[in-house]
Image 1 (cartoon, rainbow, N blue to C red):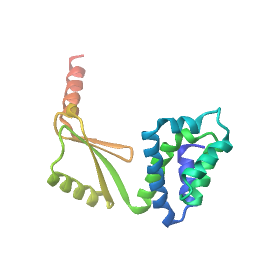
Image 2: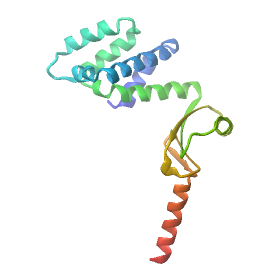
Image 3: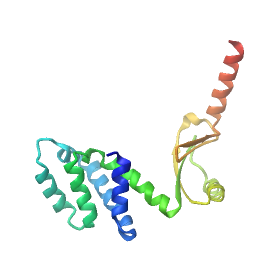
Image 4: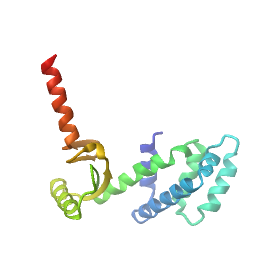
Length: 175
């Protein structure tokens, strides 16, 4: 199974109320792995039995929804615990889709002003009829303008992109 299939299976097995709680548990696991990278190595080690791994999960995640804990057991059984964070990302996207939310990465040479953020968010919300969450990334190589990435699409209005297109156009004419 792929990360998408695992995420969908978990999404469908949870009640609507449980879905948001599961996101919080994914964040907790992410925090654990960031603070203690050995945890992921332990949970993916072929030298540790699945029973020991499940016992550790039961102790650490005793307050988690039962469906989430059983899901973690399945990942252990299928030797897929290493892709847990990929599954979490896809699962979060299912939540966003259900709630009519679209995440847009905004890449610019410098941080956007709050007015520009509001203007961009408002424009995207009216265009796509969805609530927009902007994720800003500063990338000086953009030089100016912005690059938007969302749902596998790219809108690149950066100066860097314009210079690249001009360079390609000139190169073709010279050849």
